[in-house]
Image (cartoon, rainbow, N blue to C red):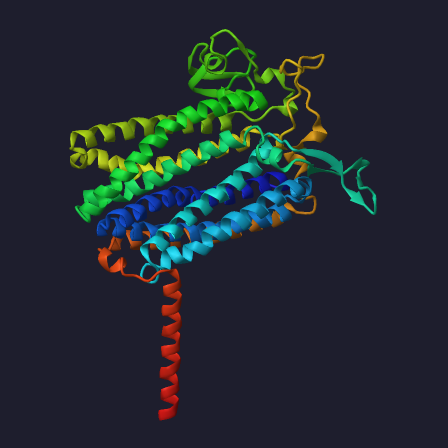
Length: 511
């Protein structure tokens, strides 16, 4: 394999998919921590405090691995995708700077109080720190999704030439262009950012809830820490049920937005090759050469109904786009349908568990608990599949050009019936790769990253398993209520330091 473009895409996909194992867990777990620490503060129940401390340790582990794996992608933008970085630098620079200032430092700063402040700050200060950590993780997701959404539906910018010595920079006879922000809030609130952000949050809540239910179900099956496990499972089940029910609703509105701005992507999702009334594909094997979905099971007119409210309105197919502007079909089709199938499975599973909980027999259903032990893998797969569908589906563009439309909002077609994009308003993936990076260099870095990430994964599994085997520890919440406040903790630590200094001085005098 000697294509630097393909190898760079594989490398970035591998590193970002590994990294994305952890941010959804931290976001989902952060809200669980807010609930548990808040209930501990309100009720004084030591079981809530024990649960909060246990899940805080799990949260800290995921946060640490997530930070370590996320830094790599920042460097890849410059090493493998320098042309892309030059094109989007003005846009991404502001978004990533906002993430660092308003999110990362907020989350990491209060994480120290959250993890190490159990015996050093008061319950109210500890709860405040928990809220700040959760808020920081949410802020971080906002800016990352905003930056990615801008690539899907750019807004609030204009395209200008890159200047060298006051004159346009010319490469191979053409000026080098870059995107420059003209309206910051239009960039932030681009047409897809809110819909995509809500869907990402829902996916994070599902992953966090199923992670908690997986570990809790394992404890219940082993008859260990039953009170802790039952309470954790109930809270996570409520969160997981609500998020699972919200996912298809959010997905429906996001799909309509995708069709409005990126119809070729939705056509790839559904294997819709020919413009006409859209069938809703449930299963099949897409064949791009034959322009059909083989062995298809579909609802006739279902796609038209979901998009327009009737079964007869034509849906734009891939035949309305030139071959060079069409995304690949197999990977988006498969990942999109996998995500939907898993989402429907989450709805059925959580509703079934809720029924048994209402009947008072949930924790006697060992078969159901075993399903929940492994269902977290489905939550991970669904989050990964959603991103794969979104990112591969926007090819061949790394920055999607605006869809040309007439005054009525209908896509403009050329004399041959094809949508014609203004190429300078977007950036193709093939044009975004660094021109000086060789295939051999990328191959070596993939091998090295593979080794490092395998070691990180091994460390994560080992430490996580150790924490699960140890289980929660029972805390004395009455003792926690006598903890000093934030300033009191600082005074206490200062007094402790002075005491140590005095002891050392006495030792020197005696010597």
